Length: 122
Image 1 (spheres, rainbow, N blue to C red):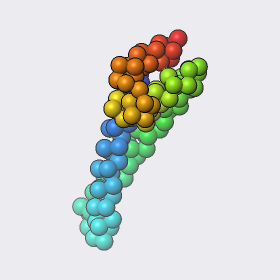
Image 2: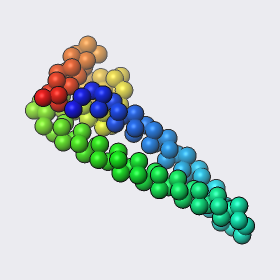
Image 3: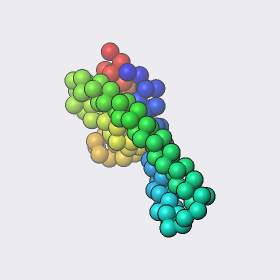
């Protein structure tokens, strides 16, 4: 597992959250369109359903990535390193938040992060 793999998951998670927000908006539109009996409304509803299928595929891929990452993190022996990796890559916290949660200075946090990345790389 590399830092790039971890960052890839983190970025995908943000994209999926954004996509889900858009889906909710379009779902609301679809519900409103359901009151109309015309071909355009039916086509639009089908397009929204197609987007839902795309969302499900993205969720499935993301869940597989998450399971693989969690498996690697579970193998890290140091509890602080493991927690740091979870906060950063699974929960998506920023450095400032992690620093407060773990009560570490930024310098110590980045040192711990370097050690944690080395632990998952092995």
